[in-house]
Image (tube, rainbow, N blue to C red; front, side, top):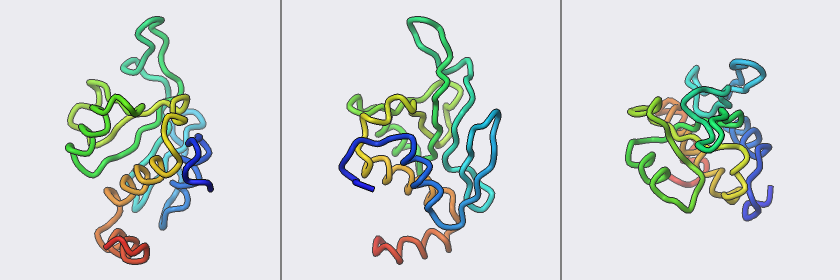
Length: 139
């Protein structure tokens, strides 16, 4: 995977499924839900009334939910207008950010990979997270 190229939906699946101890569940419709230890860390959301095009009122059908480690991380991602992450009132107090699949190309593959790895780390057990960090020389 060329990490400096623009991110694609296939990268979400590749990175999320490539993390250790991941299971893939089926959400509503054909939407994939990536979990570690029974805890979701990335999932493809069905269209909901809280995420919609402000001009047309049409519900977004390509929203991806990605967990974050802390509220500060969420605020950093959604406050930076140079990236495509957002949130809605429905997710107030929830440690996750939203991104539309159609806007993933605004991120590099490396940026997307880091966000998904952080999501996994935030939901994995302490032991699994420590092992992964040590194996990747990040601890």
